[in-house]
Image (tube, rainbow, N blue to C red; front, side, top):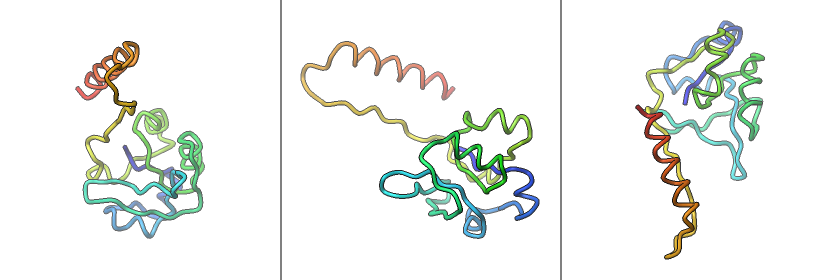
Length: 131
């Protein structure tokens, strides 16, 4: 996960140097049924507020590119924009190294073989991505 913003936004509002400064910024939030998802960094979880809440990552990224504020997304979702310079990462030293991924299924004595095969495949693939 990375925090990033458009260079124009950072020029207007400044670049946050510590997560405590997030309260002074427009933070674009991911919305779940229960409300905005807090940003989880090494120093804790931060409830953020801003002008835009959405439940779709691409829309969040596009809003950040448009200069509406800071976003918090998976690095692969913003890698092209960061490479192109339309987004700049911030607070990199506070980013968590990992974020858990869970597979939920009904536990019973007769796990379908196709479910077991998928879980094994996903675990092997994700462990390769971790390095």
